[in-house]
Structures are given as structure tokens and as C-alpha cells.
Image (cartoon, rainbow, N blue to C red; front, side, top):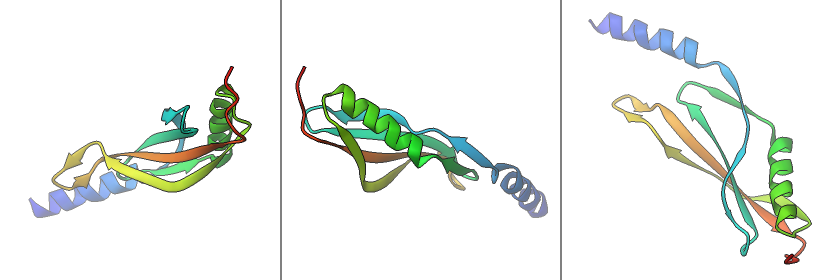
Length: 107
């Protein structure tokens, strides 16, 4: 029984350790504070391939829609477990914050 569990775990690790392209999407923010939150989800055995250029472009687009001129990342990232199991977290929700720059020009 122990060998079977070990074998299943090894196969899951090999299959799940694949690189996966992920896109940062807007999941929150505050126009008044000039902040944008971008996030993505990743499985426990996945390696996320992120385009930070795409992330900053998404943040800039949102900030410009709010009347700011630019955006920059700040504060690192936070991880929240979305699918805990007896073997650890099986699905992570990862968020990154961006600050809008250039002053808000209300429309």
C-alpha cells in the first residue's frame, strides 16, 4: 500500500510539474487610492510562466482609465491557499499590487 501511494505521488509530481502560461488579471483595486490588484491561480505542482510586461500593461490600462498616467508594481505578492488537503495546498491564488502614478484627473 505504501509503495502504491509513493508511486501515485511521483506520477502526480511529474505530470503536474509542467510549466503553465498564466495571465495576470485584475481582481481588485481602488480608484481613490490608485491601487490595482492583479492575480492568477496555480496548482501545487505547476510552475507558472508569467509575463510581467503583460501585468504592467494591464495595470497601466486600468490606471489610465481612472485618470492616472502610469503604474508600477509595489509590495511583492501574497499567496492564499484555495484548495487545502492533507498533503498540503493543491491550488494557490497569488496576487500582486500595483500603484497608479501621475495624479488622478477626475473625468
